Image (cartoon, rainbow, N blue to C red; front, side, top):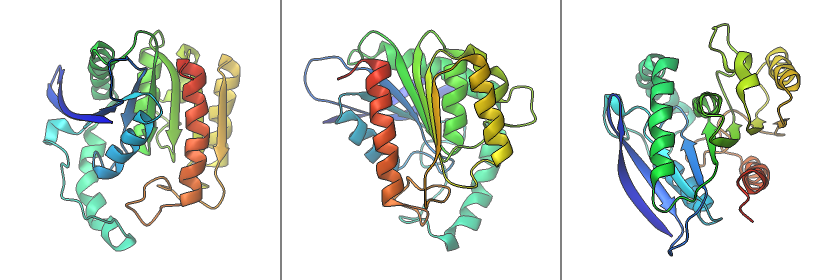
Length: 249
């Protein structure tokens, strides 16, 4: 397993990023992994390593790079319930400043950078996101349908909103297969039904699933929301999706 710390040129500067990929001279399908709202940290780097162990080149960009390198705010080693109010008070201004315009500008840079890496094979890539990163992954897939063949979101947010750029309004642009793994309460039943209905109408291949006995953030072992069974179900859904979409064994 090899890892790198990289700098991605963007329209607004350089985004620091973490990459993990298998050793050797072979090239591998690319995966763009968007962190949750807490950002790039060892937990996300571990997920990149795990995916790389299955034969992928995984790029984890710091989408908060305009505010500094990751971690943009000081993070405790473990994010328990008592730490969340203060932490999210510092994070929310960054989340709210991260507009769709910025997401799309970055997506072009991130996908272009990923596909240009010498270790990445020709062909489609996948986008994955956790929490708000699921929305970033979906926006990236919508903006680059000729390059993104799979998109997955876990404990997702911001997929159905009242805004004209809400992802659910534009899924007809998708060519990617979609999986959403949700905790109960991540989306209202009405919003989830609306999202599913939009995908059905567009003829998109997808699965959406509420993972039992989970709460928002269930894939993150450095938080009190962590669910080992939820994380395992996430791998059980994600790896076959990538295998189908990226033709990687």
